[in-house]
Image 1: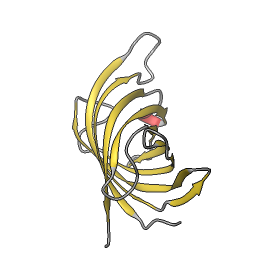
Image 2: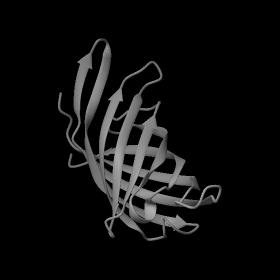
Image 3: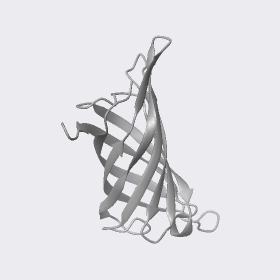
Image 4: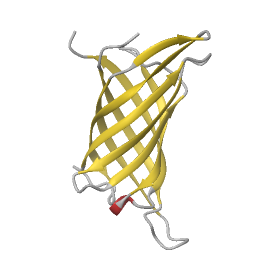
Length: 156
């Protein structure tokens, strides 16, 4: 079954341990708050007593608040992800590797994981995004942040 495009509104309050390519032993930390808006094109399949949902996710992100570099307040990114979700006894097992591309062309690699909630309109849930590094100013940056997502139906 093919699901109509739905927009995600995702607010992430992030507490990060940033290792910004500094020499060994030199670590920085900081925090930022970001809002992300997505549109997806999921396909859903009933399989062996579970529901599998997968597909591309695309959108934008803007930093609302920041304690400093490398995630500067007002920074914008284009986001491209591939989401894979499987129903579980807890509700959901979701994994979405994402690439965020800044206006400069530098990238950030994220892995979003969620073990509760759902992907249906009116649903959502809490999860963790792991920052796995990137290119340019984001090379060597790692960390993780909790996130909460709410799914809204668009277009009727």
